[in-house]
Picture 1: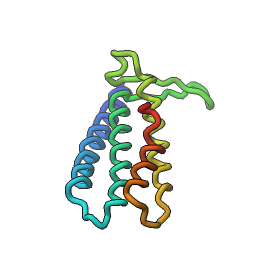
Picture 2: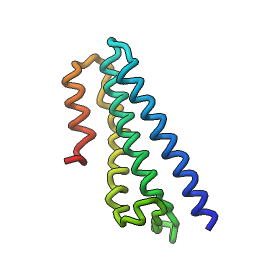
Picture 3: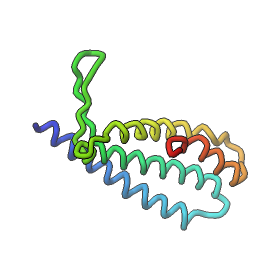
Picture 4: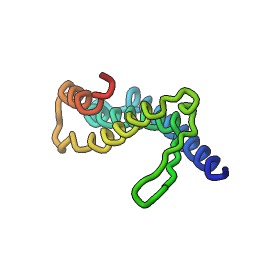
Length: 131
């Protein structure tokens, strides 16, 4: 089916590019950021790690949604998870990472926070799925 190939290629290219570019950005944040920007670097590092994990999950599942009616649809998984049969277990963290990434921008209210408080807040907000 040509739509399966289009979905497979577009998800593979975007997922691979997301993993590569986020990994480069994580390296730059860890080793090339200025000392006076550390609190912003922590927030950006959290966003990069979350986006990197979401890109990996998207690349692993490669889901294609087929609408059946106006209110329902069927999800077909084309990625490597279809051979292992754990697609839903990888789809749920993907949703969590997207929500955590979008909500993490509201943590910092424009004032300088201490590094330990910021790290504790980021861990408390964005990593409950690892427990």
